[in-house]
Length: 628
Image 1 (cartoon, rainbow, N blue to C red):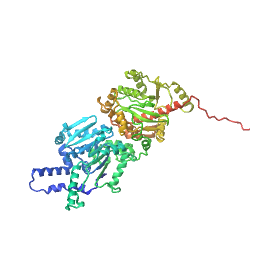
Image 2: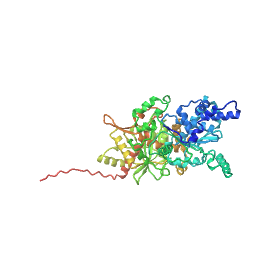
Image 3: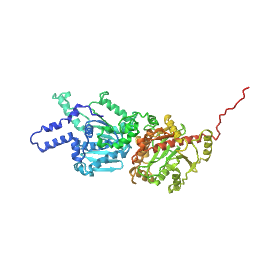
Image 4: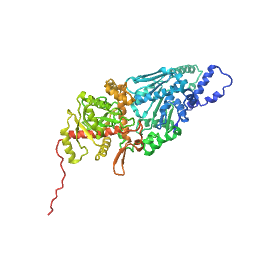
């Protein structure tokens, strides 16, 4: 579905350009020829794109580009593989060429997301076929800094920026482009990003024209209704896959759609545009049929398929973990705690570990979750996370970072792989430096009734923080832990016993507090390797963005989990079948969900130990009586 902007003046402005050019007869001078060529190229963006960059656009791409040029507020809800980032890159350089002095800001939930569109633009401009385009945008006019990527073009700029800190509030632009908009919260869009769009690019011309026409009206040479129509050139472009109906993006989608359809009053001379394209609306040659066939094996009516490939918004009611409830358990911008790089010295924390030792690009993550304990309300908050693939040494260094920056009072991990990991940690130079030596608590946390009470009595006696005896091995495949653990997480979400930290990047006060935190070099080495596949410079800003993203990733993974019972009666909690079968480096994963489930289970055991007084449980018994 493509719903174009409704405004006859604007739509018709370029509609007859080709016909007008056909009417030119005889010879024209060089100045007129330049004007005619500019009009022709602007009216035929597909031809222009092919001529200057060697790219042949599909029909739908040319239609979308034209609508982006004509509209003030645009939203592209595309299937995965629909090339929305590519179209965004093409739009950026074409718009700057035809509109001198334009300032475009590209933003996203992370700086890496914003840089992706910028990198796509670089890829096009530096290709062999883009010789003419490179003359318009010389690579020498491009700059890359830790806090901004910038390209000067035609008197204006294209800037990719991070969404964090006080500095971004000083930016001004006439075009704002937000990639992965569904991952950017309402406060960030309304309070930080939209104020970028403060004045139209051609404000000087508008004011000058208004002044001249006012004088003509005073002189009686012009009527008020004959004023030149003024149309704002301010633009906001949102790029995203579809999400859930309770999220902010859907609120904007419905509002803009109602204005387009005339069901809601729109501001005068403001144009709206929505392009909603599912996988079967894309030309066949552009969509890999094997990908769709694999994705649809899980059912083309599943929420995940409808959102990822069908470009449809869903209510999330079919998820085992209620998506809307998880959103209600997420602290809002400005609420404490936000995502943390180091813990509050007055708080206690539980650490959960879902270990994976493979360093293959398509391996599962080695995941960890840090939960802050709220002893007053007996609940917990996810405040920090880790997801990594790579050298075993990296995971050891990161665990060392967590232990030195958070007061960890309990560790719980999947027994499959935990022993070898803890053993290597205990013999590492990192642990030796701080005198760490972790020890186990043999604890059957799935025991019931009196057996569970006996386990608590023994474990509470063995539990010793100063001696490092705080680690619980939790077998996943023994007994009914998977059922109990997932049911407990489900209940915690339902009754708000698990909370998700607010985003630091959308909280200026919180961000400015942590941004000057100096990262240990070993941590920088690890997280930069995981993010970019190489060791190198890594900023606190990027670390903060990663922490905010891990919180969102964790909720997204939980939302994808499906509960099923096999033919043999075994209970499983897995990703949808088509996702579980994907095996590339970018495959969907569920390791953050596993770490969260383990962590919440660990918090339950921690509170049980703290409350246990060592007494035996009273047994209910039936005492027979002889009736005479």
